[in-house]
Length: 199
Image (cartoon, rainbow, N blue to C red):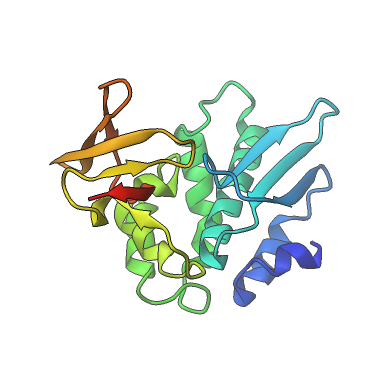
């Protein structure tokens, strides 16, 4: 594992990660920020396997994302390509791989109960676990990002792709928001990052 990868991980996780990365057919690349995903796994045409992880993630989210993608590789290797990407085989593999990392020498104490709950049935993205996602965000570098749950009812906001919405009511866990241009209704997770236009 090169120093670039080590620089993105919690110090006490490096040894365990090294043990997982002895597979010579697996390469890992740290990339620039991608708005739609934290990382991905691909089987390359030459038969090798590649994982990419966004370099802007804080060490804890970087570690979770890395293990998430390694779980895709391991599930593919052990069960073949006919399995669902985030099906039972992947979930079991992800849980097993994460277990050695779920301790206070790696994660802050306040994250451990949230991680334990999340890994009872891990989702396709940790962002859909709003409580865990917001807890992880507190370890990000300071920035001027705003989240849906923070802005007032009726506010208009813009997404990274330029689309403009108006915030509506909360429906159980997510917020109803109307796209200004089309009048279509969309549901947003409370932790969606937005740019407030006016409130």
